[in-house]
Length: 222
Image (cartoon, rainbow, N blue to C red; front, side, top):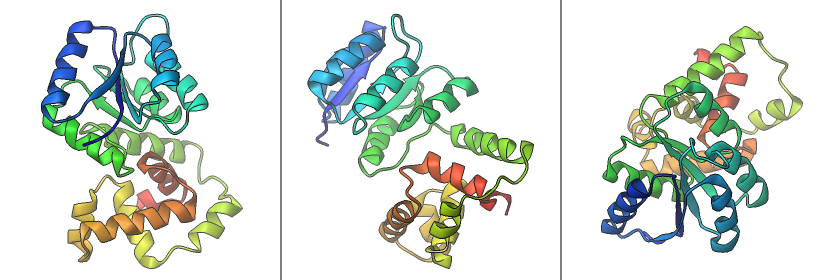
């Protein structure tokens, strides 16, 4: 797997171990930083494809660095790799543009597979976290009632086929592309093609935004 990867964590021993594990799977680490400020400085020089970054760090936290790097270098995909299971950290990370949120108890194989998923445009989330996002969006949706559907939502949804909406509903509920394909009789590759078209039509970028859109449109209530 060829990608420019940067690791950011304030624990040197963890960084060394992670770099070694990734190396055994053919993934080269292009740079390492020990806090958010150093991550911003090195990202400007290295321009990595993906950054794996902790949240709780000195100087700049991972969330502070996420906001700054995403604003300045939006093409870099940043995945939070942390021990924090706090809902606030999860929701803030997604809100600030994280491309994924993984816990440090993730196995090496799972991490490598998820890095591959990021390359394909997916948003990796540790088990159980997708369900929390769904619950948060649904709670917000119910707390404020049915929000006014913007004209853009109406227009773009009108461009979706029934098949698109069917796939959108399942993906928003956390069902994998492979499982979606098995349910509706399509290959995983075809489902991915449909999702790319859905994201294009709705002007969305990732699975987290799909969940938010589906909640806003009431698709999660079905």
